[in-house]
Length: 163
Image 1 (cartoon, rainbow, N blue to C red):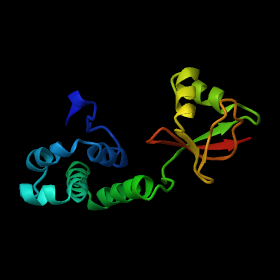
Image 2 (image 1 turned 90 degrees about the vertical axis):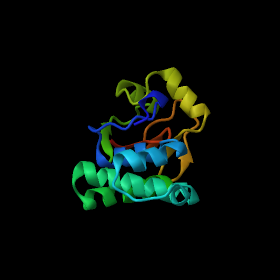
Image 3 (image 1 turned 135 degrees about the horizontal axis):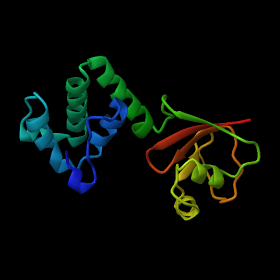
Image 4 (image 1 turned 60 degrees about the vertical axis):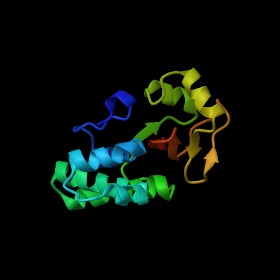
């Protein structure tokens, strides 16, 4: 689905990631997804009436079909809504143990969470690294890690435990 536009949805992704990938599809793809990937009976007018609701229905249906479970599909939807609509902390996080006094930049680069120190600085400059518990934007490139959940960019969340 839409691989050429950089918004591909792949069958080997986890349900919550797949839900997000479907929601990231361009609005004009919703009708195509309804017709080609689901058994939903939705008219063009119904789809265009509320694109967000239509996308959620499509994503829920596709995940239900692929993973064979309505429960998995609804959990994926709840996770997406919690994370991106309500701006809350997602439940399934990668957890990393970090040494005390380690710089966030060095840690993120060493774990390949960001590609380079330049990439990290770009994220800092654009306000794209947030400590979620306090909603604090990390602005210092030499910031020392602290326990907590961090949002890196729009979609990546990690939990850091300092030892």
